[in-house]
Length: 315
Ligand SMILES: [Zn+2]
Image (cartoon, rainbow, N blue to C red; front, side, top):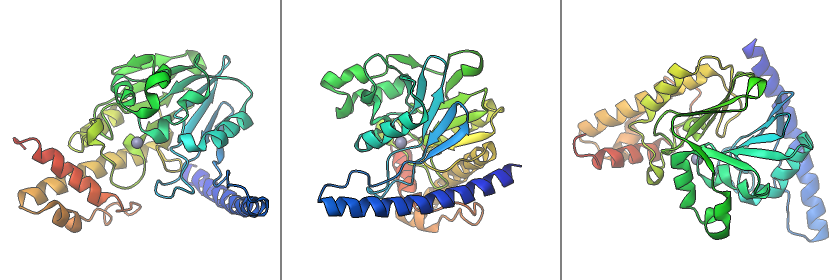
C-alpha cells in the first residue's frame, strides 16, 4: 500500500517537475522579452496530503535559484490556517501565493520547528495578530537573528514550550514535542494526530549526515539519543514530512536514528585511533549499509562532532 502510494507519488512528482520546467522556461522567456528582473525563478509545489493538510515542497539547499526554504505544512482548521515553518524571506511572494491558492482563510498560527531563516523567513508576512509558537530555546535563537531585531521583535514567538505542548482539540489537535538537542537545541517535532502526520523540521531533514548547528546548541553527540526518544514516543504516525526531502515514513525516521548512531560510533572510534577529522571523514563509509543515503554532508558533520568531543575533555 505504502509502496504503491510512493510509486504513484514519484510518477506524479516527475510529471509535476516536467511541467514546472516547461512553466519556468515560459516565465524566463517572458521576463527576458520584457527586460525585467526574474521574479519567479522557482516553483514551490503544492502537495495535498488530506482535505485539510497540504505541504509546500522544498528542495535540497545549495542552489539559490531553486531553493525556497524547508517544507511547509498548511493545516486548515475551522478558525484559520496553521503554518508549520515559513520558508526563506526571498520567496515570500511565491509562498503567500501558494498559501492563497489552497484556502482563503486567514493564517492564525505559525509553528516554527527551529530558528533557521529557511524555516522562519516569512513569519512577519501575516500580521501581528498571528500566534507564533516555538520551543523556548528556538525563541532565544530567533532573538539573536537580525530578522527578529528592533521592530521585528514583534514577530518573535509569544507562546513557547519546553517538552510538550498541545494546541487545538479534536480533529484539529496539534502536538508539539521537544526531545533534546540535535540540529539545534530547540527542534520541535509537530504531530497531527488525526492525520497521522509528523513534521520533523531539520532534526530529520534528508537522508544524509545531519547539519549540526553548534552555535545554536546543536549536538552530534546527543543526536542519536534525541531521535531515539522521538522514535519511542511517536507510534501513531504514517507520514513523515522531513525538513527538506519528499515525504517519508516512520520507518525512515527509525532508520535515521540508526544512521546517526552509526555515524557517531564511527567518529568516536576513528578519533580514538588517533585519526584527524579529515582522515576520519575519508574513512567513514555508511552508504554500504544505508544504500539510499548520500554522503555530501558527512565531512562537515564529522568535523562538527570532532569539535564537540574536543570541547568536552572527558570524552
Ligand atoms: Zn535548519
